[in-house]
Amino acid sequence: MLNKFNNFEKDNLQLLKKEKLWTFMRVKVYYELLAKSSKTTHSSKNLNTKINYIFSFFYGFTNFFKKYDFYFFSDSGQRKKINGKYVDKLTDPIIKYLNPNRCLQFELPSPQLYKKKNIETKNVISQTTIEIFSYVLAKIYVTIKKNRNTIYEYINKELDLNINYNFYSVFFNIRYSLFKFLFKIMKPKAIFVVCYYDKAYIVKAAKDLNIIVVELQHGIIGKVHPAYYSNILLNNSYIPDYLLSFGLYEKEIVSQKNGIYNLNQIHPIGHYYIEYLYNNFTLNKNLTKQIKNYDLIFSVTLQDSITDKLLDIIEELAEAYQNYLFIIIPREELERYRTQNFKNIILFNELDCYQKTLHSDFHITAYSSCAIEAPSLGVKNILFNINNFSRNYFDGLLSEDNTVIVDSVEEFDRWINLYSSYNSIEVVDSNKYLIQTLYAKNIKVFIEGLEI
Image (cartoon, rainbow, N blue to C red):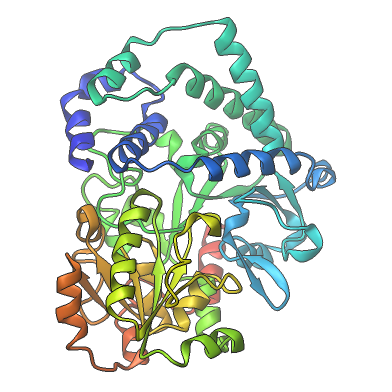
């Protein structure tokens, strides 16, 4: 599927050069292809997200009428509970260093926003106000003015897709105009974004006004992520000025041929929450009671595109190894998963994905970014190579000292029968290339270098 997308870009280079929004739309096209190939839908998730968008319309609205030097753009899914408060693991440590009084965070629900009294972030406002307003305007516009775009009619036909390009282009341009107007009035010194390609309209609005844009790495980049690599020249006004990466790997691999960032734009800082947990984590008493009767514990991180396939594998393993416990780390509502018939498959929603992993002997996934993070928690990976995702994302990236990739249940059987205990400190050391240590020091060095 990735090859299909890459070949399409190469074969249609001249055509795509004429489409000024292709730098933004290409990621949308890729994920539509991915969804089509995986035949996975998540309607319940989409419905809940839409409902939470509406209910969060006026969240933190009074914070808007103040002057700030720095804007942050994130989502509530980045929050982890630390010392009784929900902390955005990517933005809050930087906000704290810059001074919370100088920072405003725009936040999207994922799936919902937390009550302001329960979060660490001092100044936060819902981004859904702009999103909903722009969405309604875009719907009205495309209903009244039915434009045709022959380039996207061609793309849809060639890739067998049905993307409503007219709507997405109008939706993009409205949000771009609103944020550009906001930035022009407020004149922030810099903005920080989580997942730049979902917020390309924000990135472009800021860069068109010569405002510094910094991306905070939120998940796996690897060697194949289409948002970070391109076979055609992309418009730099859609791409941040800097990437704060987890480790040295991104600095080397993303700055190579076809990467969107150059070597000087990438600054490894580590992972605040991983570092915090590793130094401060204590076992959960309730989960400890459940796992004590099992020989091995596996935490299992699911991915949207292959959820059903991985769950089929886990159920097969649970039936074959009733002395093993599998703790599911879900991507959406708990009711989505089929665990009621297996005593040794549990969800345990009291803990987040990292905390569940810390209770485990092994972490299982296909291509979740947790595969990068688990070894820095001292836990080895077992990757099931579904649709070749594991090898595409992790082959040559994760060390053989902390990760094994298996292509089938039979291969897992052979490998697990040779299992012997391992030293968690050695596992952490084997992963420093991917996740740097000394997070606070690294942030200080970067911010001081910006001179803002």
